[in-house]
Image (tube, rainbow, N blue to C red):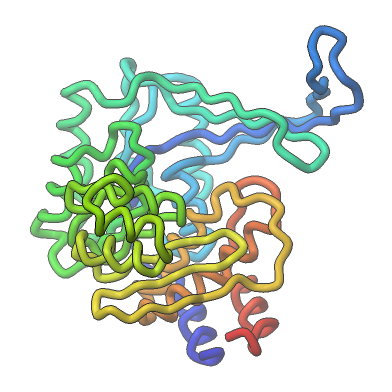
Length: 340
């Protein structure tokens, strides 16, 4: 396994991926918290520096770029300063932003995190109502389908903000240019039914347990469904994979690693490595991105999951949304040879 994974890592770079979804701007305000406010029992954070990075689907783009994959972005931002900043950050990464629509009637989604003492003290979310104006939704269809022919695969990063509608997802999946190309998704449970029949879905454990599959909510549907939701994660995952006709389902479990379930019924429990979890923010995006890059590089789903699990173990040791590159993956493979 070790030598095979090293071989796959050596081929991660070079593919082209269409990344469709909810693009956001992650702002970090870093400072020191040395006293309590006299106005309320809350810490006073003295801001020392500010950092902005692509978030949401943009964090998937960041991770793909770190691996040498060429992302093509399709999404919507506001015609505002935050939208311009987000586009600029994506372009600095080397991502193609022709498919990123800027619209005056849309607000760029911004998540501002106040960081002090090495941890997140507060998060402020700035966003409008979910959904898109009709004209923008139609333009999204065109922006998605046009570049599919030159892509090696498609990734949906769906935070249920209204960008990835049922019509859009099916339009992309059923487009002539998407035939025989792998389709990957990370989505909120409410939108799971949109991704019926795709190559890989990557929920976390909580999302898998509360997901709707085939129109039935696992924990509130039939008696059989309630048993699955309250039972083992493997049972829940098997039912979800079967109901959605997925080729594979990878359920992330933070420090406890990853559970992979494939369409043929095989299940692989990949435990977490001996790492200290500092921050799980964005770890799911890293797992998804590494699995996408590895699959496109010719890895089996189990090999892709093993690499994704190693990558997730690396990023949870860092504060904020982090990425990994091929060199870090190689070091991790060599350091954890016994585990592999």
